Length: 364
Ligand SMILES: CC(=O)SCCNC(=O)CCNC(=O)[C@H](O)C(C)(C)COP(=O)(O)OP(=O)(O)OC[C@H]1O[C@@H](n2cnc3c(N)ncnc32)[C@H](O)[C@@H]1OP(=O)(O)O
Ligand SMILES: CC(=O)C(=O)O
Ligand SMILES: [Mg+2]
Image 1 (tube, rainbow, N blue to C red):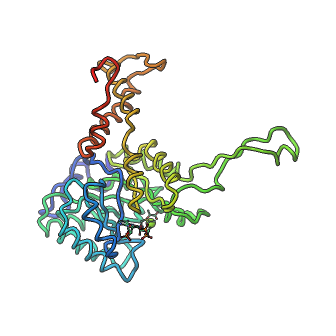
Image 2: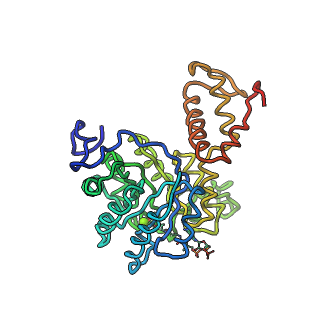
Image 3: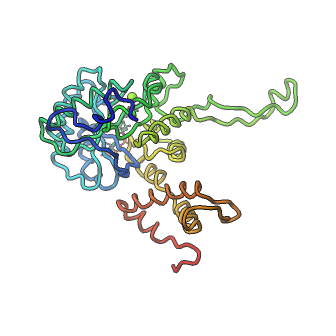
């Protein structure tokens, strides 16, 4: 049951007369990389039409990282790009300004009538609780009705305040428009008064240390292995559970150390393994990393297909390569197989790789 003040029978009714009916299910559209661009930055904006087809989501950012003096130019720039570009299979998203900012009302009242028919998802920053989603939900319905839109615009919330994290389940269930959540590690760190100064990623001081080999000062000061820990594990795990419970999609967020492609890939992979479907890309070079990490490897798809084949009707237990497989490992393998199929449908390179897989006993 959605955590909404609306009754179950009203939950999927439009919130304004003439607005499109909200979805009862959120489609699983590939969104491995949500690529951010500043529509007020002429150099960046000029690159966007050429990026169509090479990235799953293009997101015109209007909030943080856009200078206050450029807020209007960013909004107008996004309208122009959206009107002039055929996005084909690539989704178009935007991140509006925060609900307590002086810009957000103009963001919504400009974008929905001008390009609402092209906008797939509106990302709302600094969401604190269901009340923020209810506000956006009603306003979007009114604007959609006025603009005569036929497809409802979906809503994505950024988890970047302590209150937002505490209310994560009610945020996910606040509206049938809810498409997903992203982690906002920079604002969240500030709001929690964490002692980091980075945009996402780890910290060398957040670690565990091997016990001393013996007792006394010499042992304590001796060589002891340390392991850096993931600062974001708890929040990502909460986000994944809340999203799964509500049938919506979790994403990692930004990785600000653009030069450190290795740690970026690790952070993305941790999120992928924990259940996230995608991440943000802040710079063109992060797109390839995200696409690689959030597409199951050929080895994983091969193994998953072998388990599916070995499990026959899907019940019972079998041994494969010395390991027990049963109904539950089959379900995990089906997650991989289905994701591979969804991605192959939009990514010809991946399709070629997955199509080339042959299982033992099959003809090559
Ligand atoms: C905490 C948060 O809220 S995170 C989300 C908000 N932040 C963002 O959206 C940041 C988006 N990204 C950016 O602003 C930029 O990538 C920066 C500032 C990080 C780096 O920008 P630059 O110093 O220009 O990077 P760099 O010199 O490597 O850029 C290479 C080229 O790629 C272009 N480019 C850089 N970032 C992007 C982008 N996100 N989209 C498209 N093109 C881009 C540059 O314009 C440049 O073009 P050129 O070769 O024609 O000169
Ligand atoms: C993603 C974001 O907005 C943040 O980390 O603050
Ligand atoms: Mg933020």
